[in-house]
Amino acid sequence: MTKKQRREAGARRQQQARQRLRPPPLLQARDERSVSCTTFNILAPIYKRMDSENGRESQNRANWFSRNEKIIDRLLGDRSSIICLQEVWLGNDELVNMYEKRLGDANYTLFKLARTNNRGDGLLTAVHRNYFCVLNHRELLFNDFGDRVAQLLHVESAIPFLQNRSSSYVQQQSLIVNTHLVFPHDHSLSIVRLKQVYKILQYIEAYQEEHKLGPMPIILCGDWNGSKRGQVYKFLRSQGFVSSYDTAHQYSDSEEDAHKWVSHRNHRGNICGVDFIWLLNPDKCRKPLKTSWNEAVFGIIKYLLLQVASLPEENAFALLKADSSDDRITYSSFCQALCQVRNGPPRSCKF
Image (cartoon, rainbow, N blue to C red; front, side, top):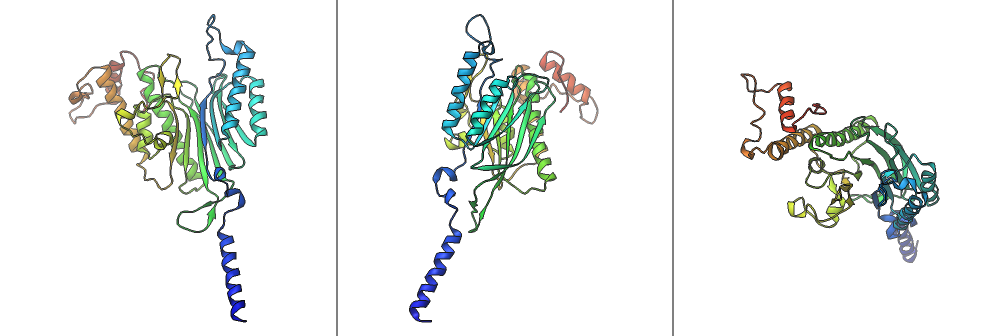
């Protein structure tokens, strides 16, 4: 082999090596490399109040049909990889067919889950087939106050991604959760909302153990019915989750950044930021789930003692007096103390 032939052979080998490392053509476009997510409480027509005569939008087909057509137009225009909707009027076949037809035609795979006890609305999660294939799908029924539910999707990227520390491409697996927590009508529901999030994280842990899954990205979407100042937010932060919107805008967990954005006007007329897309990266160090749960529960109790019972901070837990010589409080005394704080019987004393 001449020197020229050796140079040409070497050049061919280098070119072949570069081609092996080159991502597939679909990955070249910037929009296909990015994964986007939309969470949206679309306000079910059975709950949307009309200005006249205290009626509901569900009584006027033209109104709810037009509004939901515009919602779908916006969703298709955004073309998110993942769409998580809450308060979808699943009790109306025409509306459901509208979402299934238009999102399905746009290459989305859809999953629906109605709230328990025939509440009429529920969740809808849509995943774009260009980005993900769905490996598994589970339904989580909380079976507690408010008939709330959650969806879990186990997905795999449809296009390979380059691993950070290697030259190989992998199809990344992830877990996606869509939920809508109960509204905090009063302080007693704070523990219920926290328990709903705890159930979600417990279920995720159990699912990963059942299927022998390693660390992977976890995305939690939905209407959390609580702001950055609440215990649910602090609980998820203690578990290593980050709010994607706050991260993108470089907002901190400080009090001054607690109300930098608004996502919702609730039925009381208050504007607030309660819709979150939480992300947990697989390399994030996490506290034991039980530790975060205990901290959050005592945070709620302390808030009730300080704000509701008007106790000074240095004496916040004085109401929980020990009733035995070894400085412990019994379960019945603990519940009795909480009843005093709430000025009424508790819905539940289960922690």
